[in-house]
Amino acid sequence: MLLDVLNRLKANSKICEENEETVRTQLVNPILNEIGWDVSNPNHVKLNKKINSPSKDKMIPDYALMNDKGKTILIVEAKCLNADLSKHIRQLSNYCYNENIRFGFLTNGVEWMLVNTFKAPAFEDRIVWTVDLNGDLDVFVKKLSMFSYENRDNFEKQFEDNALIDDSLSEMSFDEFGKVVDTLAGKLLDNIKKKNPNFSISKDKLKSYTERRIFNLIEAKMEEDDSKADSDSKEALTNDIIFSNARKDLISVTFPDGSRICCPKVADTFCKVIQKIGFAKVAELKIMHADSPIVTNERFRYKDYQTVWKMGEYFIMTHSSTNDKIEILEEINTRLGLDLEINKIPKQL
Image (cartoon, rainbow, N blue to C red; front, side, top):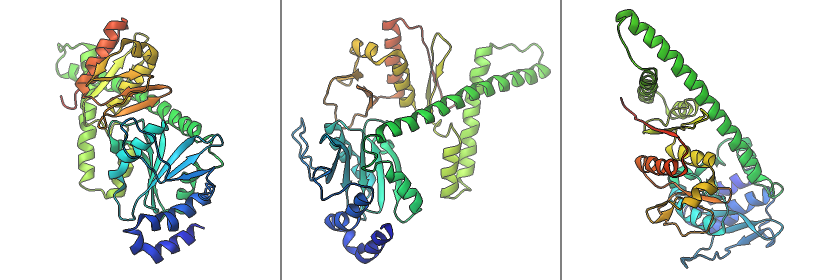
């Protein structure tokens, strides 16, 4: 079937570049049908379903995919073949937010971009993955099949399970990194003592110095490799090095039990710390930033530019600077008497 779609693409590429209706009928519809979503069945797929919006903005997504109870669980928005899908993430996010659903697809029929509405520090970071019909067809089918009609009641759990595995691996990596820092700091001190037996420095200060130095060395290595590698090797480097995003200041939070949270993205750290403290406890503090609640389980009309994550029944507003996030965490720490150790790890010494 996908080969038929590719043939249709070749025959209608010029029209698809300018006409969304042709993209829908010739490309999107047969692909949705292939993964079980019968676009001719209004019990499965509602075309141009109007969404009620508190702002009374006109919201009519191209496809609303529904479960057996008639609830929209996935939205698909189609664009022309030559459209830059990343420029339409805000539009799709607004659709999904007002329907209170996590996932949506942006597509030009060939490229399919999965967007997670509630998680990311910026619109472009809400992209979970992108697959291309002109690429590996096995990968294309495997990715989209997760969101098939047959899997309609399970895809969110499946996604959460995958995310849990990724998070656990990430935490293991940081534990391993901590051991590496301890080892290198010890060897560094031994080398210094050989040159100056009277040298003195606190263990924490030496460890902090070593950690920052590692970040700088990784950054320098990435810049060196970027000048030599092609786009494919750059992508592999980004995926393989867990500190590839450490070009910005990081936040490290240590709990009294000794557990530490320090993610490559500050927003991840912010949300995971609040999650460990307890969403309900933080929500009760009613902390506001930019006239918006930091944590709430109530529907709130956040501003369009504000980034909001949804974790369970709670919404976490992460649209703030690193320093603001530290101040918010310090306030939470003080008001709840948590005795957290909150530090900013600078990108440079």
